[in-house]
Image (cartoon, rainbow, N blue to C red; front, top):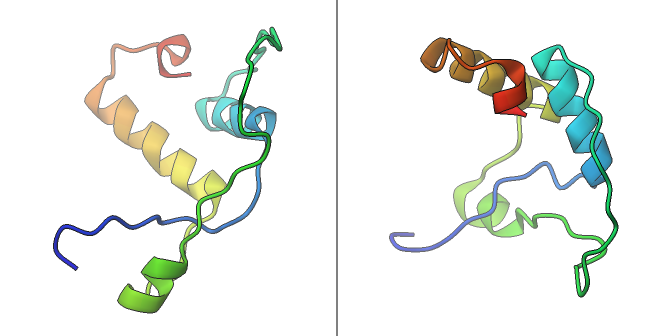
Length: 89
């Protein structure tokens, strides 16, 4: 598999707003995104397909979105302790 690309994903669909809310929860802040709705030619719905990782690597997701965000926030807080939540969101 040298040089090949793989997607690693639980293959669950989340809206951008759901992800923003989950990031805010992980950071312990209330996220208030400004939605301009001006983007054109955007892909409406998209998810990562982890079929190749499952079939070639026998990979299975073991973390939820929430756990992954918690671990990510913990890492950033450890390595960027000066950064307020507004920098991380």
